[in-house]
Image (cartoon, rainbow, N blue to C red; front, side, top):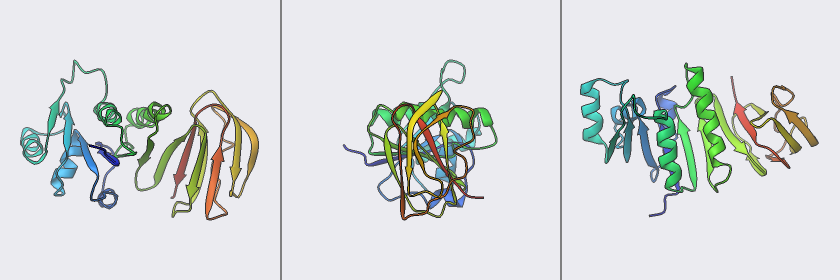
Length: 213
């Protein structure tokens, strides 16, 4: 069965805004407390997984009862975070789009690790995003179109040591064949000036981050 979009709910920052991102045909994966969030709001996860160390026994029972499938992982034996486990399973299903919600939050180590998951999509034909109420993050490995949205700012940050051949079209601050090195802030807080913007690079991996205050 072809899956057009998989949405992973993790245990980071969540709220009513996250529920509005769900579409009728989405394949829903709940990772640990992300599964509880879905179940508590009347959604049936297609898959719930994790070590479930952040939910009570009663909450876990509710997750099991409401989910189509549940996968348990030992908190000591597993090598990956619950979010990465969900991400790997989602990638194996080869969806057209992959969206991670609740991957950003108060634990900066988890937040940064989740952003790095985007690197796994670089060699696959999967359009992947990480979102919260204030940010939308994707990876550019060649050329990308950025349609206009209600996000105010667009920032570019290298995910590899160097990104070369960066060209921006439709932005307030254009670039032509530019180079960004990791640790530089040159790409922060740009803005679209057209109905859509275009980002292309020659070599490297570039994080494209839309944000609003």
